[in-house]
Length: 229
Image (cartoon, rainbow, N blue to C red):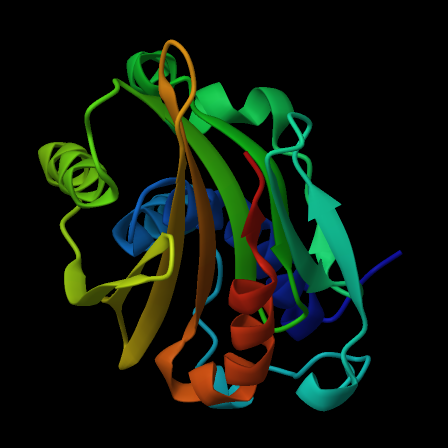
């Protein structure tokens, strides 16, 4: 079976989004990894550079934000749950995690990613979990991961940080080049546990230009998140 060049580009780009977006959702405000990974992959496989205004939109029209159906995801430990769009595509990261991030980093924070979802336009939703030594609050944890990100050569532009109830909400932007800016929102919850604290990081990323199209969905997800201790 043969596909048109544009459709082939869209299929390849979706693969890159799945692989590269992992960095954006694993690290707090880590959108820089998304684009670093995407650029490296494009250099290796030589994807054609098709201007955004010439790229074909999704073949299936997704439900509007107001009509979006939701399902509930709960972590295996039963401590954290939230709603997610039922029509979005799920990707099992599994063993790929160690191919995308340094094993030392994964082991240091016992990093796992139980859920990664994306829609047909490349917007992502991910849940990551970390383990930190006791005594660190969400602000200090955020600063620690920010230092890790910068040490790996991937700084980002944090534009907002505030406590909302029991969660820390961090907004950031990343310049993707060619006039494209991505916006990332990370919502962190801290669950005291013995011997280490567990941090649940619910992360959203979308183009700045169409972030408003997802505002209702992101608000629903953020408001549905519950930490049960």
